[in-house]
Image 1 (tube, rainbow, N blue to C red):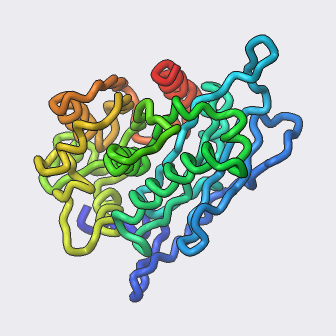
Image 2 (image 1 turned 180 degrees about the horizontal axis):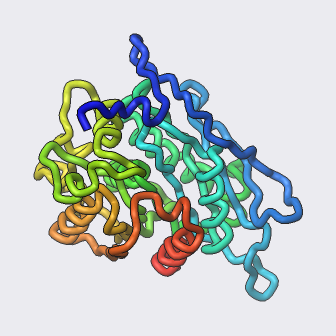
Length: 318
């Protein structure tokens, strides 16, 4: 492992000025605001902060459920994508496809957040961007000129924060940030953590067991934390390891019901199970769905697993 270069693994170059050159060009998808044959959703990109260059991609299903010819309002999912804090955006093909599936199969209005990436913007920047996205959704529901898909079809009483990988970490922290904020008419009904990204200084059994994992080797995981965390702190800071007891536990106790999804072959599965334990100890209602078979991001490469995760999320939401 000593000769393994995590930067080469992802074709990354850390520049002297602290920026990252991302050599891999991941496929992207344009938003499709107008219905078209073969597409189950429409989507649009909206800037929410010009200065920070943050934006969201909003998805809605083209077939809207109705009751007695009245359109049924849909739950709102505020979605935080995976990518170890350093890669991807809502336009990445895999992220776009996941949001299409969530919007179609739940069905729901999905607001996919383009938070700023590390190391150009280190934590807690991503948490602040996530909080801003929640406040932006709230504003749309009360502004007569707000985003029409949210105003016309979204149900503000059923809003959920959904995070995958590092997005699960972001959703967790954003939920604590807004726990005491007046979000009316928006109400956070729950949190969904799909294989959330957490860490710590002391190695867990799963980190040692899957250190050479092909999907997410331990040196790559360490590199992601090195690039995402503020330079003056280590992996036992609450951003990375919220299981270390601290004042933030008071905020954890305020969280709404949580769904935690994980796989036995994920290098971070022990961290995810520790999270469940801490949530329960803090009095949070938790549904834990761990499949002993599977690896990190298996739902990205296996359509049947993707459908299974969506079905679990739908049961939790509906």
